[in-house]
Amino acid sequence: MFEQLKTLPQDPILGLMKAFREDPRTDKVDLGVGVYRDEAGQTPIMTAVQAAERRLLGTETTKAYIGPAGAEGFNQLIGQLMLGAGHSALSDGRATVVQTPGGCGALRMAAEFLKLCRPDTTVWISTPTWANHIPLLGGAGLTIREYPYLDRTTLSVDFDAMISCLEQADSGDVVLLHGCCHNPSGADLDADQWAAITDLIERKGLLPFIDMAYQGLGEGLEQDAQGVRLMAERLPEVIVASSCSKNFGLYRERTGALMLIAATPAQGKAAASQLLSAIRSHYSMPPSHGAAVVELILDSPELAHQWQTELGAMCDRILDLRAAFSKALAPAGDFSFIERQRGMFSFLGITPQQVQILREEFGIYMLDSSRINIAGLSAATLPCVSEAIREVSGR
Ligand code: PLP
Ligand code: TYF
Image (cartoon, rainbow, N blue to C red; front, side):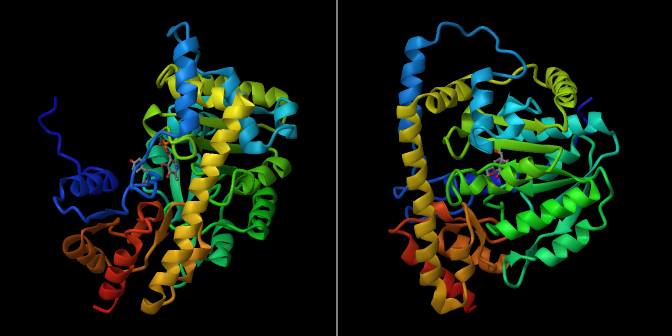
């Protein structure tokens, strides 16, 4: 059976992680994979998470199965985190939230759900987008089409091109948007652009599908959800995939959620039953631990405050690094876009050859596309990284 199989290349982001690990240089800098790092280059467990884990250990009484929707308490609290407590979609029974294995699980189950709604669904994704969107959504059998998003010369959103392309979409098509902290570009929609795209989606009868993997790491928990909340307010149907990997630092615990908002409570009930059936045929039920931790944190005023303080400090660190980095790079050209962008990622806009020189000569690792993880910088490494980039920019 296996003899005709070819070996496939691995995920380039994970491949880069391995190359970095194997590099013996002690002054190497990892700006590759998107995990948050502190000033010491570590990705520690958040203290609110540790406290919740200690409490869980003392109070958990069973490891018996949870259901396909996961923990009801987690689902409610995550719905409130996304939409704000008291949002009408939550109180009027139109929204369903289920716990998923990470944001990836949410994206894939949304795709499986869309396939059940309509087997020939087309989903429009931004160019560029996170490379895993294509296998996660295309792998479920959805047709993928692309809309232009980034102006490669200014590295800002090319909104006119985006809108005019999406004018070609047909009623019932799905538009994948990044809720905040666009991966890989860091270029986000502003409030006016969210409003304009909401108008277009409404007028053309499209369905928004929002990937929220970085809530709280752009500008703050509330600001980062403005697009999701606007669409949930104005549109009859919305899908949101959210992740607790970054904002709770729970990466390997595989914790995320999928929210479906339907036009009516009756349609919401039918949609939820279809989604649960799709979950049953894929993984039956999600892992419990990460969501139990998140539920404990969000349900405790004291832990929630501690978590928000830590997350706020992570967000501020990224914003400070963005300001300092764009200033340090100024002698090499206009890198002011780095300060304007949000979240963990930006493109440097340098060539693959320059990326390779940075890796080989300077031990500075980034994706071939020149995407960097801003959080991989620190006060200690920022001057030498900036110096190296200034130097290769001249070559
Ligand atoms: N969506 C985007 C844009 C991401 O960058 C990520 C990963 O970090 C995810 C979704 C899903 O992450 P996870 O499955 O680890 O929660
Ligand atoms: O883009 C990133 O770096 C993060 C982490 O298969 C990631 O989203 C990278 C690759 C992958 C899963 C997560």
